[in-house]
Amino acid sequence: MQPVNAEFLAETGRQIASLSAFLGGFSATFLGILLQSPNSRRHVGWAAGAAAVASASFLLAVISGTTLALVMHPGAPPDIAKATFLPQVRILIIIAFTGGIYSILLSLGLSGWIRSRQLGIVTSVAALISGIIVALLVR
Image 1 (cartoon, rainbow, N blue to C red):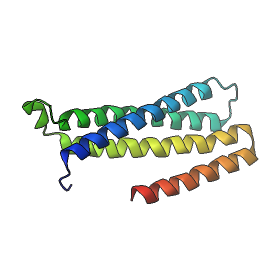
Image 2: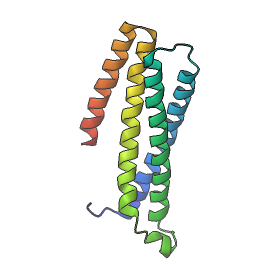
Image 3: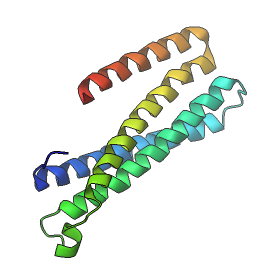
Image 4: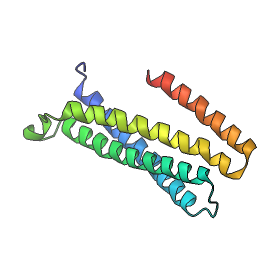
């Protein structure tokens, strides 16, 4: 990975951690709602599983983003500021955040099938288009 400004990395960590905390909370809430569903169709289980993966992924992104922000902070003690695990933390943030985004999109796409075929098509198309846009933006 190419060297990046420490302030930029710290701010990136803060922003990803904040966004991941919000999306992780949404995922966990969505998971709770799906688990309470009296519907026993396969779609409920798959949507709930995707919401659980999204929630766990966003939790990892929050922890790694916060760690990155702390390590890169200008006032960090010298022994913390020279963390050797920084490249691994950056990779973990990317994997966890991206995995969380795609998992939550999968969960949202599947959720419409719980109600009806028409709604399932709409939510699946919306999730697919969103996934493509995310892929283009991340690239």
